Amino acid sequence: MKKILTGTLCGLLLMGPVSLLAQSLKSYPVPDRSEVPAFPGADGAGKYTTGGAGGQVLIVTSLKDDGTEGTLRWAIRKKGPRTIVFTVSGIIELESPLKISNGDVTIAGQTAPGDGICLKNYTFGIQADNVIVRFIRSRMGADIKQKGDDAMNGFKNHRNIIIDHCSMSWSTDECATFYDNSNFTLQWCIISESLANSIHEKGAHGYGGIWGGQGASFHHNLLAHHTNRTPRLCGSRYTGKPEEEKVELFNNVIYNYGSDGAYAGEGGSYNFLNNYYKPGPYTATKSSYKRLFTAYPDDGKNNNVKGVHGVFYFNGNYIDPTCASLSEKQRQAIMKVNKNNSDGLVIKNDFAPQRELLVDTSFKIAEHTSLQSTWDAFESVLQFAGASYKRDSYDTRIVAETRKGNYTYQGSHGSTNGMIDQPSDVGGWPEYWTEKAPADTDRDGMPDDWEKAHGLNPNNGSDAKNYNLSPDYTNLEIYLNSLVQHLFPDSK
Image (cartoon, rainbow, N blue to C red; front, top):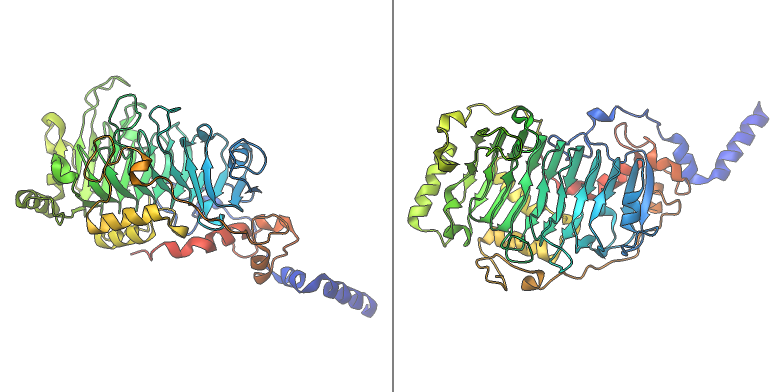
């Protein structure tokens, strides 16, 4: 027995201190991930998306877009559960639209060393189930090869999707369009400066987004400098099932919006909770300055349910009256809405009495543990939203303009008061600095030094999928979450 024990001890000593630590780690069973948030800070209807948890790790090492191994397009085309990490930062100049068609994937943009990842030229589309996208910029721009399109979108009846801390701008249609999905969340994103007069086949078209879903949450997003659709609510136009359309908007900040602002909602149930509207110089020239929402009836052209309209709950929404371009009369109208949110509902052509569109109790759409007061949310969104692990100069400017209530640029094709027409109007894409990625010997997405510090083996690539450091998240997820956990406020 003594000989056996001695041999065992000698073998452990030869394994080294890291392996000894690994031997002492707990090994938790795989949890029921349907009860675990996608990551700490995930909230809303897409809160329990699992993405690529427990799957293979794919490493993006190149900014090319030719689909070869090491490119983002290569990683997205793969099938099966997978987490995509980056060892390079910079602009990926897309050669065609980039679409996620195979689900069970997590894109961890926060792993990019340096200033992070920015997509250029074409749409980034999500057309799959079970998708997590974090800390990615999509600044599309206007290219003569395109027609009107979105910076980022997803509307193909998919489920379990969460988009977190992304930045979207310079679209030629909408910046962020997501509807007809279920268990969906868009949170902590900056959605800014859609191109007002660019290359859209319909002409002027600088819009924020079309939003909706059969269980969809849109919270803690900043929408700034859009001529319209902040957002447009899709309603049940394409499903023909208004009873299934359930959407909540809470703690969003909407700055310098125009025309109808937020509108439509032809069928469905909607909560508007503690959103902060801030009219800017452009807003002051439009009747939307005093509107929370303009309700439309369905015209019946898409699903033959003519006359169907949405039902709304408004509470805690606030319109900031401080824009210097507002008249005293406009301010007084705004204060009336702040006192009674129902006065912020406009009914297009008075198609129905207000009592048919408003309810006194919020709809049960999804849990939202991150709900803040309107004023706390305003500060939190300006501090944390967008690809803020390394906030670029563009997002920094947008946040500063939102806070100050001003604008810096105008369009080269006639747009004014903060609306732009092409990326060159604001100086174009910034340069993104990259640095050498930390050593990751076993290519499991976790740096060697981090693994050693946490008792993992940097020469064992299989431990990324294990549950040693937490009963709820894989070891890799613990690392990914640790990078950005400081970019959420404490829940109120």
